[in-house]
Length: 477
Image (cartoon, rainbow, N blue to C red; front, side, top):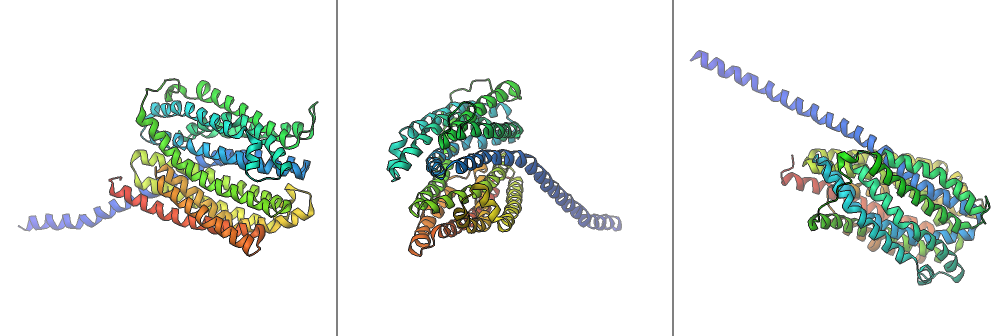
């Protein structure tokens, strides 16, 4: 009896130690997962961020060249860009299913499924691209529809027509780059964008100002440069994906079987994402038009501020894309722990970047404005807007990252409703109040945009917490 008692007491003595060791192992494992996720986010986000910054860098280059060529041409470019970028953003939203489904398949180690997603996405992307081109081609009619003055309508219509030609090539590049990013290989896209930036500088110099035997074409010349770049990017990315990269592993040359379910899944994710992007971009397009109602100087200041905030927004978009990939891979593995780690790592990573950008805006607002224009009156109007961007970018960047994370988790409908509420129901009436009723001008617009971004960010963060709990209940580990 004494012997049995001794054995029992020994076992009981071992239990706390064993339990403690298990908890210690779990804590170490969790820390390792966090560190691994930070490393993976950094490895994936850095090339994606550089790629996105490079894309905006081309837009920045275009704006600077055209702005220094002529204020009138800058107005043409601004209005044409409003329509063109809205349609292109919707097209990119429609193709969000590519990166999400690719990441899900990659997380399940189903590499050939990744290639099948790409093959289904390419004809879909081209169809979308041609539809968007067809919408843009009656360009003068569109400009008149927006209520632009006749001279602005004619000038911006010429720019929009040139942009329209390059849209199919732009979406073809995007869908192939999304495939590479979804399989954690963003480096080729980054390299191509960097090369494109160098070409774009020389092309703008030639076509905007008229060198090398070409006439000076202002904003139209800049649009020609953009279209040429898009053709180069699409062809170059096709060579990388189908001829150079690991095409055998992913089976990119294998024609997918007809599968209505998979096609519907690709489209459904895209519909929600496109609606989200369309709501946000559409609201900002309306803001751009409303800024025109305040006069040419106000429109110029808003255009510069918008370009500055877009440069920051694109950083958040890069981090958001990386986080969406890692969240999508975690979902493919059915690991809610990894989803949480990927999501919160991306949010914190982005927040640090946004705070750094905000400090930069507060310290150098005059220098930033002077990059875009030499007009002292326009600089004076733009400086306070750049400073206000310091606060707006924190909330805008956060909502962009979280909505990408939710897409990676295939949560589409509720975030779309949130964006509609924030940017249409909340932001536009606030702009009417602050800018026009209270005579706040363009500054009133920025205040309204900041409030809308803050509301969106807070709601989406709560939604991410809810989604993770729901997956917990569904049996994710």
